[in-house]
Amino acid sequence: MLAPDRVRAVLGLDGGHAAAGHVVRSFPDPANPDAAARAALYAALAEMPSELDPADPAKVAEGGRLYATQCAACHGPDLGGAPDWDWRTPRPSGRMAAPPHDATGHTWHHPDQHLFALTALGPGPFAPPGYQSDMPGFRDRLSDGQIWAILSFIKSRWPVPVREAHDRLSAGMAR
Picture 1 (cartoon, rainbow, N blue to C red):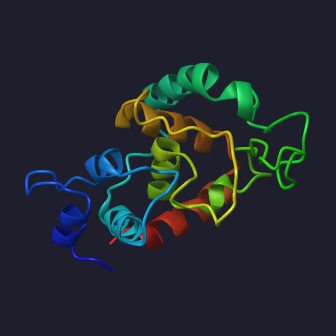
Picture 2 (cartoon, rainbow, N blue to C red):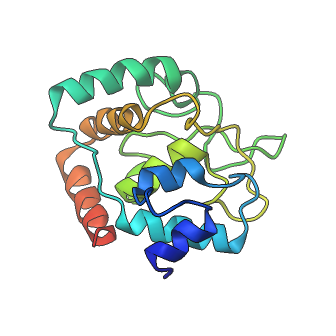
């Protein structure tokens, strides 16, 4: 794992920008990350504190409003994913359909910090070679707080056992 000063150097940040959220926002082309930038991103995510809080009613309400305007068109108003296609099978175009964000999907299999970065950057830095998706990065449209609010809303809709499993996974990511 890269040291925090190496993370900042790889991403061209000065010593005053140690926050991992800033590292995500400064990440180079998410569609074509090089190995050093990808390693720096993962190192930064390991240091990033989570602001995901499904128990905060104000954050969940804000996240619900933002989800409705920014996410529901693709991921479904009920978090059920693209209604016209199995999210695990490429469309004829080769692009993947939007996955569900409810308990039937794989969203809860990713730690908080990865969900934040995936929302901010799109799947590019995390996807295997050749993976194609219509998921954009939202770092230019949403603030960090808005991204955390959307994720808090999504998690608030999961059954308690799924939330608890996700909590354990995310705790393993934190240092």
